Length: 286
Image 1 (tube, helix red, strand yellow):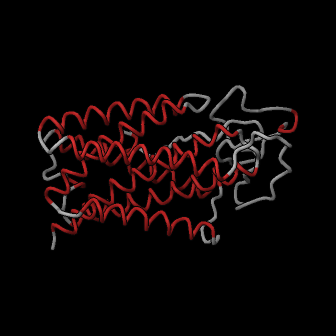
Image 2 (spheres, rainbow, N blue to C red; image 1 turned 90 degrees about the vertical axis):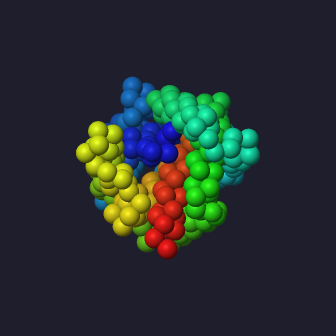
Image 3 (tube, rainbow, N blue to C red; image 1 turned 30 degrees about the vertical axis):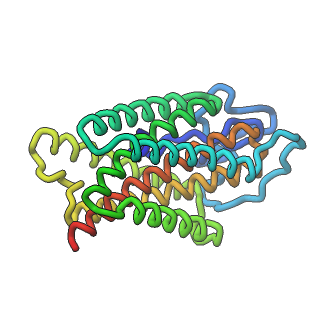
């Protein structure tokens, strides 16, 4: 269930003059060949430390480069698979102990598939769509559980997710947020610290040290943590947008659009889950 971990070590697109993440300094020898053949996690040699966007070099002439249409189509397929899985789970798995067990199992399968894809050097549509299907099953049961207690919460969470993603895209395209290497480093450091704190909180709750969910309670503190989590999701959306923009500009292979869809789906699922919890918290306090 990658929804609980938005790709802190996300790979960029593979290199055929494609995208490969963020960098702290230019690399030498880029023009002599592919510096990423030995290390799929190597950094982007054209993203300067503090420069927002440099003028990209001329991409090589090829007919098999990624385009925005490719990203849109793959993202629609992946998100559509999540939606279909969620609708079917909602309709066929009424809230019960059995459905909870199936949802947890689906989440674990989705997490494993996401991990396998994250460490593969090339995108696998089967793995990505499989992740989306199992993630959808989990979200369907999870959403139905919330809806049974807070009627309409999933619909409000969907609207909230659309609002956050739309606002983030608007701010990004307007240039109000500049995705530099420093921006990425600071944001990822905050995200890792957040996840470490959440993991410690989970252990404290599991051993009975913290009550009512601890930092993830349905009170004011839980609302604050939820808002932080949503802001982190928006941060990862800006990294997704930058990757897509750079991948297209630098001639990433067309099949890399599956990686773009994969990253966007995980980030949007993260935002939706946190938004659903936030809606429930605010509804509980009414």
